[in-house]
Length: 191
Image (tube, rainbow, N blue to C red):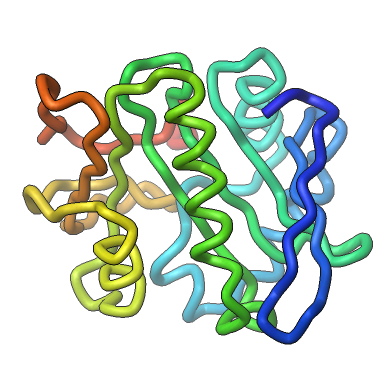
């Protein structure tokens, strides 16, 4: 997805949303999203902290193409934050978070498909992701889109905790296997 490209998606209840790449100028927008996550949401989606240093590093990586970091917007509010970290590598790492008020509207599947299409278009070998063992809805959605559970791995949460999560892989290249290494954010937010 190019820096200035926009994609329009429609929810089940016929609301239109705009998807666009997040840039360094979106620091406050991303921080507001992070601050808007409910306790329930941060239990399953807390990929990094939302302090100035971390957010600027994440958005800088997106601007230069190391990551594909996107936002789903409902007018001026960011309703979802999703990404392919390590987008410059053969196997990027997928993450998706949607604010509670926008869940259940059929947006997750559309967002994931956009990320899959971007990885295919770029020629990636596959996509990895992790999900908490008790997040059955997300696990089922990922499975329905072709991801397969291959291991339980340690994953670093946004507050530095290391969690055991289900690792899933969507394979594009039949000669490539997924990783069983620690799945970590592309920036060190623990310092």
